Amino acid sequence: MAVRLTVPIDEKSVRALHIGDSVLLSGVVFTGRDAAHKYMKETFVAGPCPASERDVYEALKKGLAGGVIYHCGPVVRKRPDGKYEFVAAGPTTSIREEPYEAAVIEHFGVRAIVGKGGMGPRTLEACRTRGAVYLHAIGGAATLIAESVREVVAVHKLDFGVPEAFWEIRVVDLPCVVTMDSHGQSLHAQIEAESKRKLAELLAR
Amino acid sequence: MHDITPHVVELIKSASTDLSPDVEHALEAACRAEAEGSAARGALETILRNVRLSRDGGRPICQDTGTPIFHVWYAVGWSQRELLKQIRAAVRIATERAYLRPNAVAALSGKNSGDNTGIDFPTVHFEEWGHDYVQIGLMLKGGGSENCGCQYSIPSAEFEASRDLSGVRKAVLDAACRAQGFGCAPGILGVGVGGDRVTSMLKAKEQLFRPLGDANPNAALDALEKQLHREINELGIGPMGFGGRTTVLGVKIGELHRLPASFFVSIAYMCWADRRKVMTIKDGSVAVLAPR
Image 1 (tube, rainbow over the protein chains, first blue to last red):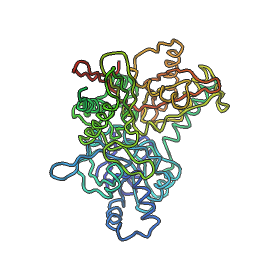
Image 2 (cartoon, rainbow over the protein chains, first blue to last red):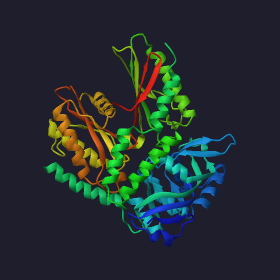
Image 3 (cartoon, rainbow over the protein chains, first blue to last red):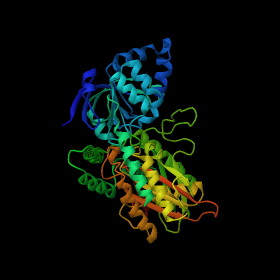
Image 4 (cartoon, rainbow over the protein chains, first blue to last red):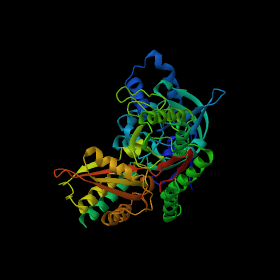
């Protein structure tokens, strides 16, 4: 049975999750990938925040406390009424954000990272100390995930380009699997260790 | 020469939104093989639902619509320059219609061109052939899977790979293990053996146009393809790297002549969203097909 997780997420709900758990995520989440992470770390974490970026900062601070960052560069359509609509929105590879994510989790109080492929030891440690979790979405399942996006609430830093902007979206029942929990466990590390053992066996044949 | 731009737009739409039956059937078989209630089974069920939704709605299977890689075989009398112009125009139209995500980014500045055209973007390979019609193959190669591609120069002291079939086997096994689930497993591996650093990888990518169920005309390579398919699945990496029985849907190997001094084994990783289609234009009639 999948666990339902709703934003804002409290620490207790995150601590109850373990690797291998299926999750259905609902609420307002922010997309953010390469340009967004570099920007967050350089502009906000390192600070001081310049006046020109203050509005973005306020929106992120409010939305990311107990919130979710989704590693995703969507295909977005602008409707005739001027509103945006998500067309395709699967996860992108998360490991590229490893140099930034721990600092972002700590600075903003993020409770869940959604992406694919998992992340490294620094993010795992931030999940453990701060009470956060990594949720693996289904890579490539872009139409299905776009259908779970019910509303585009806002977009920030659209000058980064459509894939790289922060899209503030309301999702309902986004399907994920916990692959890094707040107890120091990583399914990715386990699978990697087991497959390397098997590889050594095959190479010795 | 007539304008094929609208046909190429349809080719792009078909590749982006309608997964070929060979890949879909392989995913269905993989789904049945995983344990009920497992994360791997759940992942494949979600993938298959997504494939059907995308086809029904005419929407991209994956938001990373990748590098559009075209292979054009044209008859005498067709202009390569005109074809290139029309393909680039078609890519712009397909981007406007959201069959493609704007994906062409200036290498250093990071600026997105907004319409999927740029320096040598999209990729287009041309070849004149002896037939009286035009055939265009299109592959949409996503970034996550492309980043899992790699090239070995063997012999390798690291895992004792020698310049023979056994060395090729070891290199491909090593590459599959390094890729884990990162390229959106279960993927398909295209392998190029021989050539130089460029032609070897090109051969690897060309293998991805082959239908999953075909046989390699070279019996030794055919046997190695089947062996590697089985052995890579023994690694247990599984769909999305969640652990499971299917890590790859297939392995396809091509060979080309090399220099005495070089022995390259190149591996191109294609994600489960293996989007490739072939179009023929003959006497004004157009057909878009899955690879045969």
